[in-house]
Image 1: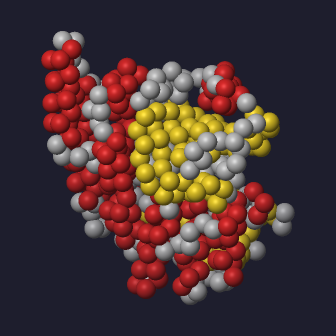
Image 2: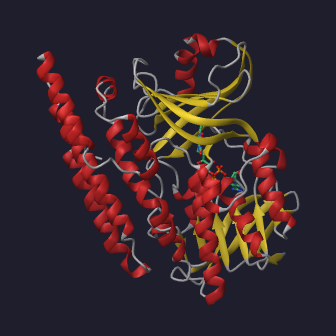
Image 3: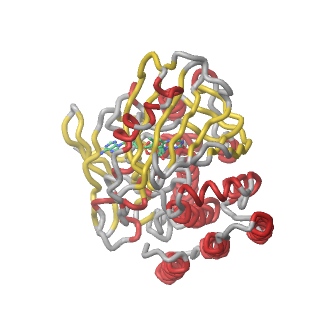
Length: 460
Ligand SMILES: Cc1cc2nc3c(=O)[nH]c(=O)nc-3n(C[C@H](O)[C@H](O)[C@H](O)COP(=O)(O)OP(=O)(O)OC[C@H]3O[C@@H](n4cnc5c(N)ncnc54)[C@H](O)[C@@H]3O)c2cc1C
């Protein structure tokens, strides 16, 4: 048996549910969404649940409200390895109840005519005449084929549809494990009231979380979401093992009444996939690596990718062109709005992963990078003009005053980071206007990455 729709969305996580919601506002498309999870488990991927409020405002998506909010957030504190140096950057956000927010977005979409198939496993894309023509699913009702002009892969890190496409397509690129974080988190009820609940906390410490960080996100009252991520593909110990052997020694974590949820998963930490579209096909969210590479927050970027997917779909239906070219607006929009920042932050991530705890401590203690720099870095993906020069002055004064040995190589690397971040952003802002320019643009990106790594003395 076969069914026909205009748009099929595989996966109803933050990416898929947001796209369903945005398309439902048009009321002109017949849309079906599939997820292997049930309503009770929607958006069930383990997560820190933190999201900036600006994402909702920028995209016109109703902000979390009522019991969709576990905790309102006013800012983030970043701790140095010794925890003696703390940067606090202010900005509004939420710790959300993912299941409740996911349910609301999807129910709103359903009330505007979208159809949802829960507990339905998406098996493969239908590949016909050089395009994706739909997908095959399996559920209690058995196997079924669904056809549509546009099929969207929003299945998270599984990338169920894109992994069945020809491997030479940019849209089918697979994730190098080193460009991911493997993470574990628990949601716990503590036996004390968490102080300063509206400040979420990130701890930089290569001994505890190599290539990543550990976090403590208050969830209201005496609850907290506590976890850590370590760089994948490096042979580091499992984050669950580290959590139990190291973090559990900390009094603020070990003092707990009960564990509400305990789970792990991975998250991409690289630039976005070079193209989010192909003939009759779009990929968004974790499946398209649309995640902030520095902190691994992916819900906001998944929503941005969904927004540009909705724009691309609208344009394709207006022109009747569902080819890669017809959907290209999704690429241009995403790359310019956030891909450029994401690609420059990937360089920051590589830089940070190669610093020792001593370097991190030095940078924060001497304010080589200041709180304000961190704020701008987070918002724009840029290291401020002049900040490195100022830092060099500060460090030189410090060296002169105390007659200690300097850290010139660290400053040179920081200077290189600033330069390459600016260049990378520039290349992404020149993302090609059609598929014709993609391969030469990819060469520019790859060349710039190679130069950056060589400047830092790294092989990748
Ligand atoms: C431990 C951890 C902490 C994190 N903390 C944060 C944070 O604090 N803030 C933040 O913004 N991000 C955080 N992230 C990242 C964030 O969770 C993801 O980036 C985000 O969930 C991506 O949304 P998505 O819709 O692309 O994918 P997902 O949330 O993974 O959703 C994909 C959906 O597809 C469905 N699916 C998969 N395969 C199939 C199939 N074959 N058939 C049918 N359905 C399928 C899944 O059931 C799922 O519902 C964290 C990640 C981890 C691992």
